[in-house]
Image (cartoon, rainbow, N blue to C red; front, side, top):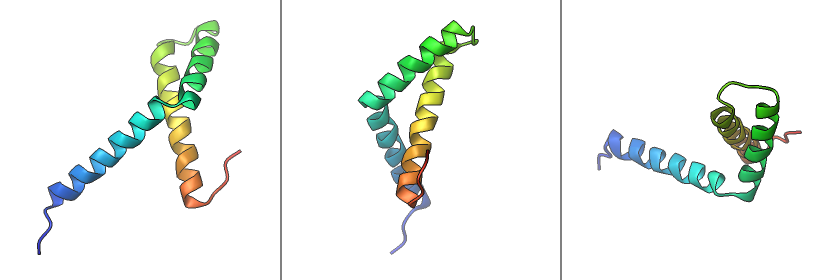
Length: 74
């Protein structure tokens, strides 16, 4: 049986979308994003809202990947 490459790619995209959605709806993400927004606004960071969102998402993704791979993050 041949599995189409697009099927596995689509499954991976769906997995990533689900992971990001779960993160963005989590209390941890919202609290971190809000804290970063306050810090970034206070310090005059350009595009504070977008930057805070990106940094919070990246931080939690990295944390989750560390947990999955068995590495502890401080």
